[in-house]
Image (cartoon, rainbow, N blue to C red; front, side, top):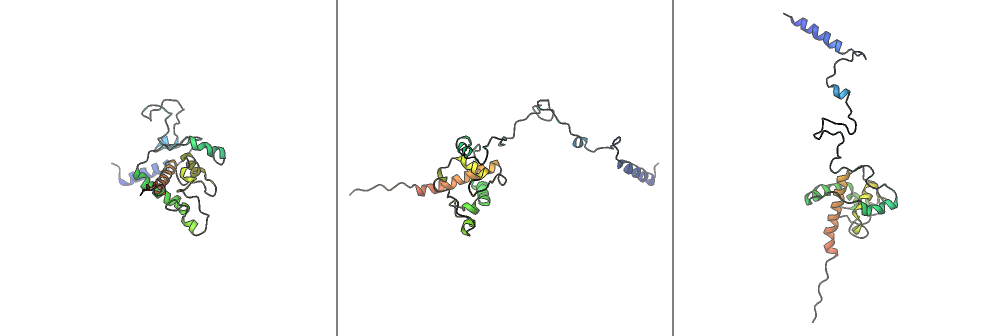
Length: 197
């Protein structure tokens, strides 16, 4: 029967030999697939996915490279008006919750909580006021141009592409639309009918 010091000696020998590194004897790997991954060729069968294909569709909501307009060209900005549409159908809770929060964090500092262009940086004279969302031309600006501006920037406004992902940009723009809609009834209240005597 092995005594405890024999077991200890065997463990030490095994431990030290496992630390020896050589190209001819690389030792044992715990998870060899992590060290030497097998790359599947495009179009080849793949047992990892349920449909058995290596080529998979992009996740829902992802944006293909080059799908959204190139920056800094006026003709691309004009083209955005007709080519870029909101692919999401947000609930009122998403817009009033996450959309409002993202607007307050990323936009309200300049555009103001109400979207009137009177944000904190404007109030302390750090920047000139941006145009109000509640008046023209921003009131009727096509959503594609709004997205283009948020993605690439325009005028003094810088790009927010690194601060907001694709879905978050559309959430912010949907919140801006809700601000505009809530301000519209007061601005466009129908005139009272004239009374005749």
